[in-house]
Image (cartoon, rainbow, N blue to C red; front, side):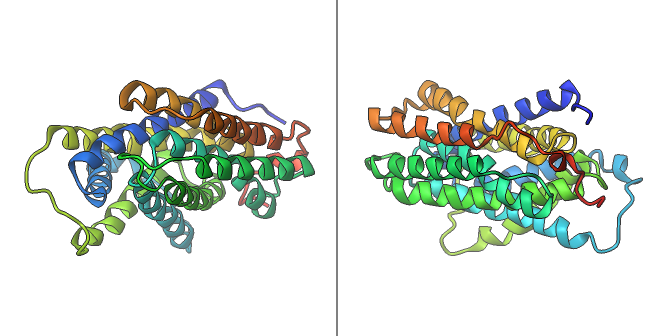
Length: 303
């Protein structure tokens, strides 16, 4: 069994750090523009960036029928994932939403065992239960505020977004042996752009009526650094590291998000919420079974 190169782990670290910053950037952006405007804007910016270098992908060897998993990957994330996360952040704080992200490794473990032959153990299931319980306590103790009018609903919507992220990660892992990580990132950007464009014309979407520098800066940051750079870096790492190990890097998102939310948004958690957050992270840690089975490193799509 060959160990993944160090740059793969550094890519995963860079990706999740940028993802953590997205919660703060979205909160700022939503103060200026409608959530659907922010999300479509970030996808448009990322797509335009890829159009500048699209010639670099002319040698990609497409396999017949792969449009289905490629479409499914893009609809899961950024499509449905961003819809639910945008709704979540209109109801809950960035720090709480970031904590719900810690559950991704556990959510990934079950389908990874089914579709990628990656090992799942009783310890993983126990960790899953602990994390779920911690997330419930985190939500139940949350109090409504101006920035978080319905934290319980917001946290639930963030959990649904994490389920969508799970579909993305598993599909990405199956496609990565056939396609490069930056090509897959480009496909995500294009699908996301097409997915969100019709949502701009929903009756509930408020289109911009004035230029807002904070809103535009948020869109540019989310498009270039979060949508393009973060997904590209994470896809690079994901293509070289087993899915259950790569998803474990998501554990860093709540910690980084808590720090950034405190620094830029002035958010605070209660003592009980900190305890619940610790329970979530403990559950995630417990779920990471250290006894790796050889099957955990089977490359998907080659068997």
